[in-house]
Length: 115
Image 1 (cartoon, rainbow, N blue to C red):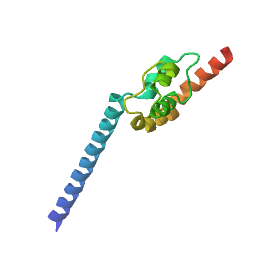
Image 2: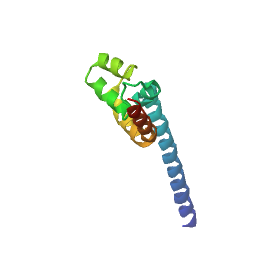
Image 3: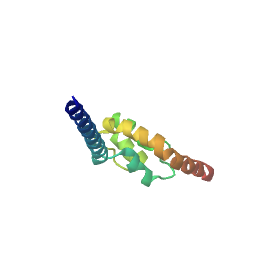
Image 4: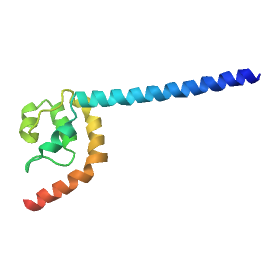
């Protein structure tokens, strides 16, 4: 019986290692898809102007692009929309919420004060 327990423990360790590899591959693929088709948030932030939206700019750009109004997107954000805005929308929302809110709120406040 002791040999059998060793085989089961080794099998479990290999299974956990395989799950970690699968998780890492999934994360890499997710980021590849997100950045290869263009993240709206990463496109809009460097191109802020006085008249462009600041808060949730990537999310708002995706919504405008989903509505099939490419001319509005170019005029409003000064950049092209991602190729697949519906695919990008949840990632832009997450990035706008978690990472960029601390950056975009001060920018939006300073622009409001200047106007």
